[in-house]
Amino acid sequence: MKHLVIGIGRSDITPAPGTPHAGWGAQTHQRGLGADLPLYATALVLSDNARQIALVDVDYGGFDDEWLGSIVGEIAKLTQIPRDHIRLSYTHTHSGPNTFRLQVISEGLDMVKNYMQGLAFRIAGAVWQAQQNLKPARVGATKGECGINVNRRLHLPDGRVVIGRNWQGAVDRTVRVIRFDGLDEKPIATIVHYACHPTIMAWQNQYVTPDYPGMVRKVVEEQMGGVCLFLQGAAGNIGPRRGFTGDLAVYRNLGRILGLHAAALAAEIETLPRREGMIGLLESGTTIGLYQDEVVEPETPTLDIRSRTLRLPIRSHPDPAELETKAEKLRHELSEARRNGSEEQIRAATAQAVQAGMDAERASLYFGKRHIEWPLQGIRIGSIALLAVPGEPFIEIGQQIVKASPFPHTLFSGYSNGGFGYLPTRAAFEEGGYEVNTSIFTNDAADVLVREAIGLMQDLAEEGIN
Image (cartoon, rainbow, N blue to C red; front, side):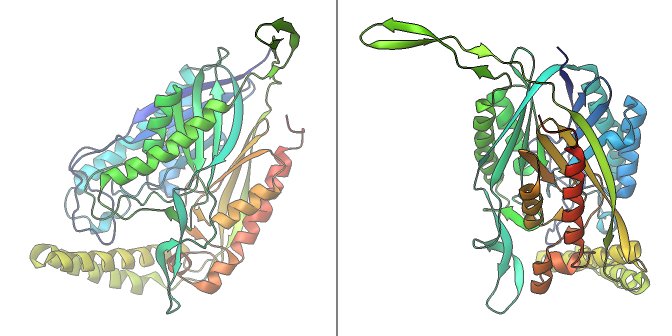
């Protein structure tokens, strides 16, 4: 019988000690002391003999369009998998190497540039390795709940919205799990999907970590065997219930909690179903029914991948020249603070320089534009749909899409296939706050995304769902 075919691969992408680290506005250190847990690029290649699809999970903060093009290009070159059949997703850890705020780095810039030069090859190598390990597989999925996350948009009495813990805010605590087994029913790969910002380790921490997703993978692999991939959900307004700490035990503990929940769910999945069959009775101390369950080979799941390029409306941005002048002035003040200032002066100067740099960068990218092209990608594996967009969509967007999905199992993710930018809901724009103030989009963008995502899922379901 024809089967789905899969392969797994992994590369260690941990930076060397001394590499510039994190990039928090409030941090005073620049170089990382080393890694508490390794950073990985983990790849899953799926094939139905007609096509190959690569799904890549990377312990990284994020990739802009230039980085995306470089990495996907190397994957396609090495593996011959078409570029539009590659999904590059990142966990969005905030305690990895600082590779995206280079203008405020004054120590170790050569180290981070050297790290960046080799990153695309390491990620491509993981996909190539997965290609070499293709084997027949069966797949199953389930879901449960875990409460390590909370809405992070805290409403203060004075009307401000800040990053904190909003226990009454919208949240989705669903843990979605996909399990791939070999024909011997032993796990080859497990996918864990959950929505929560990896901001447990913050400006106080000087160690590279994958934050809680790395611990999730570690625990699932210990409990289940095989390789685990973590897919971030719609976490734009969702954070951890404990975070912004320098205590490494916190991310390990929360990751362990989620990992154990996910492993328990994975263990319950039967990729080779059985039909109950009673074959007789046996008299013992009482009458006992005897059963011989019949194996039911599932249908080969439909494998498909489709994409749409959305045209999302964005707000007007000011002329970048003035903002860049301001940012350059603040970077100069940061340099002075690092030479002669106190720790608090360095912290304040870093925050101002980082914020100004972000403002200037957004203006330089989007000045004069009213719309931006935003890729939407959907992968179908039988009754499972994996949808992915760049940026940081709010949790309510994911909930709307999942609710309208024709698939029993729908995993909607941001943080995929390049691009930065918070994607808030229409209601959030009326409230304000950090995510809204820094978003490039207008309040109509979320509605466009939801509509197009539902349409893409309907296209994927054309052949019926098995």
